Length: 357
Ligand SMILES: Nc1ncnc2c1ncn2[C@@H]1O[C@H](COP(=O)(O)OP(=O)(O)O)[C@@H](O)[C@H]1O
Ligand code: SF4
Ligand SMILES: [Mg+2]
Image 1 (cartoon, rainbow, N blue to C red):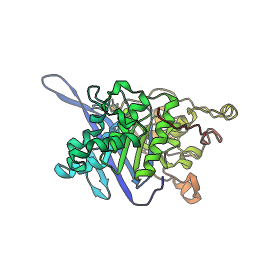
Image 2 (tube, rainbow, N blue to C red):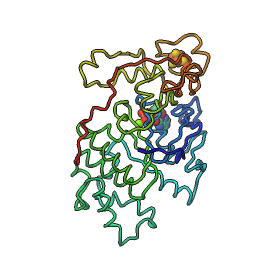
Image 3 (cartoon, protein in one colour):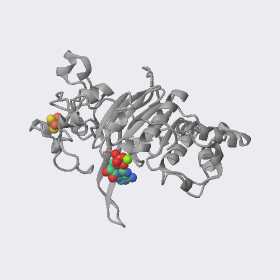
Image 4 (tube, rainbow, N blue to C red):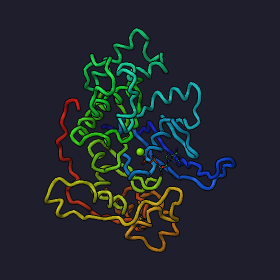
């Protein structure tokens, strides 16, 4: 997980609004689902960026935009410094080859009627130049081996595998074209806790082996800590706080990050007893009706009148800029303040077993 200054993938002002329509014959647009509403980040080569937020905050939409499975409403996606937002034809094919996705659900993302060999080798149908026909079988077997599966499983079907093994198949497929970036959309959320660490360890090993850069999406801060160099916390279509993992876990300054951290499971009973439990009031507002000013204000215990009028920018807060250190990282809060939620509890607890899941 060595990051260099050179960004491999960047998002600039990324927006995805889905039109909300009424009427069957005369379809009239009555609003928009603001799934992604202005997202900026940069992913360094060999780096892992963890994106975390509750269900519905726009994580999967960001993933689909990055992989060019959908087009943004506004904004720019850059790959190796080049704007690829409107890529088409051969350029689009090349971009898609280089930015691969691992899907959340290993039960629905693999075609049940295809053999594992055909699933993992499918990218070669679209990119025949990546593997001549005569070499495909061997390449697929190599990929299975790389992800810790028996290369002789080639002719089996997805239902003959466990959830963890299926996710390994999905990872093998994502690796087939030797991409530079993998966008993993909650790759372990559908798996048993005992298997999650194995799949994360596999991704970790593959990153070192193939020099991959990852966008790793999760709904829980505890899952991304082990694998991320940097973390971005999303709320209602925007990043509200971002920083290195030490900055986010030990020096969170945005109330939403603090609330998420306080909900993370704490294995150590001593630390659990001293944890600062923050219960958020209310539900996440609908992305069709985003609150004015700070979008988190309807659930924020610190909200003041100013929060309804001013949109907080994602920037290093003025008062921390002078201080420097780990507290000086971007936070979109008008009243950003440090609050250590669980002292020492976010240390790595190990227990990441190996072997196929
Ligand atoms: N194709 C679509 N049309 C309309 N709304 C959508 C579409 N895809 C996602 N949404 C909405 O956008 C919001 C963000 O969804 P999503 O990106 O899947 O969030 P997450 O992955 O964080 O759970 C949700 O409110 C979802 O219902
Ligand atoms: S800007 Fe106001 S409402 Fe938003 S997070 Fe900060 S204190 Fe809370
Ligand atoms: Mg999702």
